[in-house]
Length: 503
Image 1 (cartoon, rainbow, N blue to C red):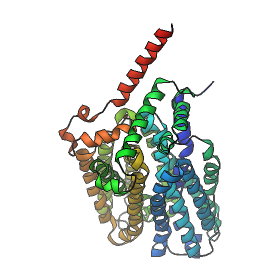
Image 2 (cartoon, rainbow, N blue to C red):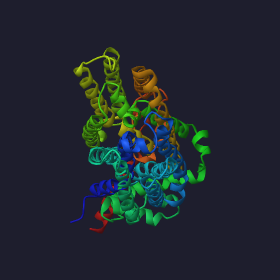
Image 3 (cartoon, one colour):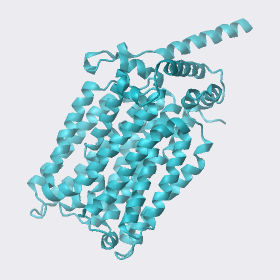
Image 4 (cartoon, rainbow, N blue to C red):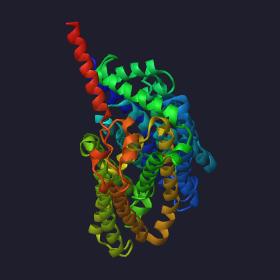
């Protein structure tokens, strides 16, 4: 019995999102690595700028990987770009695991980040181009969900190696770094057995292959299915127009107003995600928890629990995001993040670390980080990948997502470098930055982000050409094209007439 088409699309998306798993694993494992006594004695103390480089070399590499992933996705196709990312990541993972000096470790971190940059840029784009509009949010939210799975696995492996190996044994951190290579080999070895993006095929003068892929994805291979024909016609018309009237270069993203609007929103979204404070907590959980007197070992345990909470939130997002849309979950998520940071900051300010024995305040801080993580993981985290992957047209999608992802990693690198210094020097005052940013994020997206849920990718040009810049001034029905519904009705009518004639 064949799988229902939407289940098939979903499972292809699950496999591709192993690329996101690699990123999540790294986010979860690095806090343990830089806090391990064997790592500190062999390389650098946690407070050293060299430790910050261990974190930021990864995101620096990811920045350049995302930059290269854009043109690679257009030239080589989505699947081959995923394969390239896996190969580079494995090289970086091997260098990290066997590092004999800090410079080897930095090089491995950079290469692993380079591979991850390719993967996290291309995977949600690949998912968005494969799936039906009604489940696109669910499938592309797998990026954040698998990121959460990776972080969860890394947290518990890290906790196990932290307490399971002696403080003088480098296996305390080498084992957890080495295990990340396994899923990368699995993804790279099998990705070419999965379908290529039908939009990429049609855009590269392979319309028959594109039609067959659409039929395989949506109708068990039936190329005469009404939805397959309607979507194929819409993609063909959109790409033909783009070929005749629009450039495929980066220039269009900046000169064409609707394209620039989408690029601006996508970059603003990715920057805003880093300014919610999520990376500060992920990368420097040990010193941050240390501010309130929690030991490194207990911190890793609480972070492992935190990863379970995040995964539950991401699963809820996966189930509900296509029902509730993109706009309001993003707005409310940022406001929820703000409230948790306000409470956590007050707790540290009123009960300063080292001067207060108030255990309730310490637990209050821990619980607030858990609530924050639930809020972020249910809303902002998944939407930071969903929205950029669905707003661009075929000719600019790979490049637009590439630039937006570069912005994410640029801000991520900045947070990785600044947080350790800020926590050590100004303490709780640093968190006020994230209170302000979460509030301004909510206001910004309320004002400027239109609702994109459940609309075909080919209708985004119309939406961003007709929706007002200040979104609350317009009505949603005024910038919804409805083209796919019209085409579907026309094809169904023709098929009914044809069947009647044959009878």
